[in-house]
Length: 403
Image 1: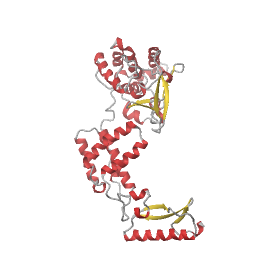
Image 2: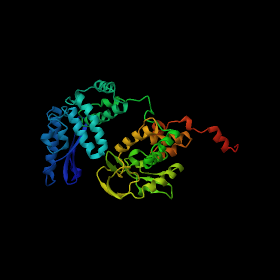
Image 3: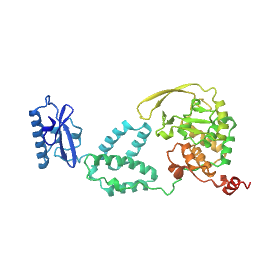
């Protein structure tokens, strides 16, 4: 039967399907309601295809009239061309609907926040009416309002997604975002402001009544976990025999979840000062109560229950830390220590910078931090600390047997 099929008519499983070109896109549509495939139904399919092709040539093809159940009917207008009526606000809603099914809640919160800038600027305007220069001017205006380059680039992540949808759906003949670059920062290491060794000691000795909390941040200066990974660490993740901790989850915007990138689910080898601190931390956590939490898996949909004894707990309530209460405590603690204010995530930068300042191979540092390559370490995390840097000549002299 398939050998006798007319051009553009094909058998798809137990259905007849026709194919045709519309605005440079190949469309394939099944023909519903055909119970039996025979010469008559094949002739019907051939005639329908010929009718559609004629209507397309004459500019009177109505996709929805022929295929009301097709997803493409919502994309193409009644006259054969892509619907040019989609507004930016409609584009945001369409793009966000897809992201809700694919992205983590913390990512969605960021997208929603950034999409507000786009909606305020162009919400009711048609996507086809916004030019490349309009978008570049919007980018410049965001910077002029005082938004950081990273924030502007995050806004344009949303913009790029919406315009890519419009281009893929045939609404745009070309995508102007392909010619608009992200904003580059002149300060690659602007977020890296690590503690030096003197400051680490001051942090550790600032409050004798909160030693468990102080040990937590000192430990992380020598372990290099992110704040979200550190507060989610449990006794069950520690192997004192091997001297390692396993990073299996993080607390992100109040939600426990497995690391987004596979490289971040890792075994962290602990150096001596981290091990010595961890011995005391394990004693502090000896009476930690077991707690069952829901951990969102990497698909952002499925949940796994885990019963854990959290390693770090607040000194007053004795509950697991959150990012917010840890940041609040750390701000006050730095005042007591007489150390210039930085965020608690600088402990992670401190580990990378101290290691690099001691000539530790960057590949090992990247693996400890959970990066798949060294790019992020070189660009963002590592900052040379001259006062803590050993004499390379002295080290070479020792290796060569002169000392």
